[in-house]
Image 1 (cartoon, rainbow, N blue to C red):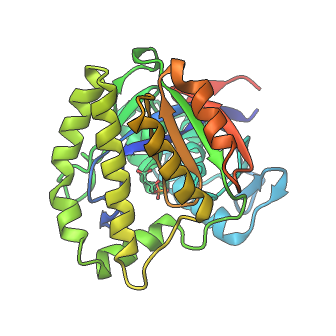
Image 2: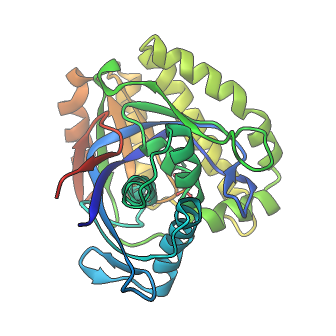
Length: 326
Ligand code: PMV
């Protein structure tokens, strides 16, 4: 019997960009995110003595060696912890576009961690699950939790304190999130390569690291107080600072396309006129607007009006990763 888990994607309000340890995949900075209801990955894992290698079926197709290798890397850690040598069949599907900047790696590795550790007979603490999920993707530990989550970079060389925690549950704040999909193409430079390039070449990298702790503590407080204006300012600052860092890498990383930039201006002008909205953008061209419920219709109309916006996904704070019956 396979073991199945579902995890939602998340979007960072305070961004993670840069690793302090590449091999152990330990972030160099903390991050704070919102887990997004309904943008999910469903993953089933079944270990079997009859298999000679791991098999990954991704969105109904047999996955290539790169993707299967990433999954096997995490399964190896779980197998060694469980004292098992059995290979697995992993079946995974996303209900949103993969690798186009909609954080599919976060939901994928959160779901895989929960399903595979359970299938291997392990009963782990949230911190232990975080450490495993992080090895798959630095943003994945945040998707283990519902609502508002923080990923801490920690200090230990082995990454044992680089774990995520829940800051506030999904009921804490009824924010609305509108994702304007501007492209269905996978991005040119994945986050791991992009981060490494920024660490090696961007003259802004040290300033990014040095200013991170203050962004985190201010965001924690602003979320606790549900201070929309403060959360808006901090989110846009963190997003633009991350993209500034990426742009100042060599060669520069430009994740935006024309409609992404157009949407930035549109949201800024709405906000200037009193609408409760702000934006954030990850390492891809998709545009994410956060707003209060009363502003949703107006913001959705404004985004839909932008040339190049293909569709709008409506979401908001959602559940953490969980086991489901088939
Ligand atoms: O977890 P990764 O390796 O997919 O990196 C995520 C990087 C950003 O999405 C750009 C920022 C973030 O904190 O999610």
